[in-house]
Amino acid sequence: MEYHRMSFIHDDTEYTFVKAMSSELTGYALISACRVEVTIYMRENNLKGRYILAGMAKV
Image 1 (tube, one colour):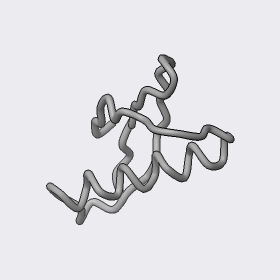
Image 2 (cartoon, rainbow, N blue to C red):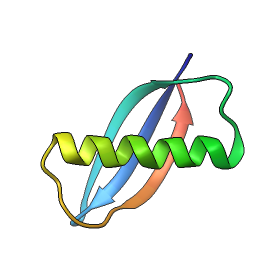
Image 3 (tube, helix red, strand yellow):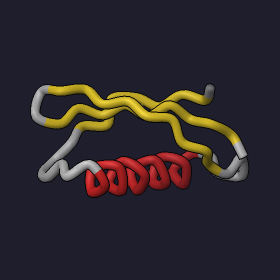
């Protein structure tokens, strides 16, 4: 497992969180998993609508 910091913008506000993800994920699979985690974060925090993925980095 590796920790990744994910940032996204929703309604002109930037949100950032850290999530543990499989170290086996690379390339497109990693980006797809990141988008799934952002969607889950938004649902858990009652954020609705579109978002822009602003960044992702291993921490």
